[in-house]
Length: 251
Ligand SMILES: [Mg+2]
Image (cartoon, rainbow, N blue to C red; front, side):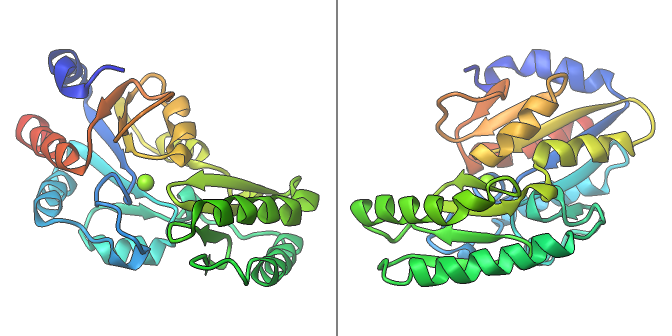
């Protein structure tokens, strides 16, 4: 898996030849370091500065595409000119969930709240159109038991819902929401003129976007085993360096 900076000549040549750069960025684990709870995750000053410079540049179009709610991710960044997409890109594209999905989702949530109530350290985050089961604070055997419960409760609805495995989190998402791959393709289809897509993400949920952007510059952040991305960066500090380089060379 090649490191992005070891191939900088090739990458920068490709970026230089494109009139516009469509830059898609995941938030948690990519722009900001992960913390035990999602509400503790904030941007570092250096990342904020680099992002703001790119957002001001006419050469760049910048999206932050997160599994968080759109308002949440926007409030954590608050840089004008950036487009914020929540719930893996569904929120911000327009559209509403089918009535049946809304009903099934709330039914699934209440059944899981009961079934998982005795798992110490586990908590469920309600995102209105999806929910997330956080198991970072759960001991290993309990986490395995919780996953088995989650699978058995959601199995009858698997036609309409999918489970995404993130870092210390299982997300239950209506299939209608689509994934980050569908989201980036849709955003790119609205762009006028020739552009090159760049996508940075650290997690399994970013893989559909890597797969959708085979002609672009795709970067998996953090330790990797098996990815659709072309390049890697080691972590948030290198992402900050990359964003600064983009600003210096191309903005
Ligand atoms: Mg992430």
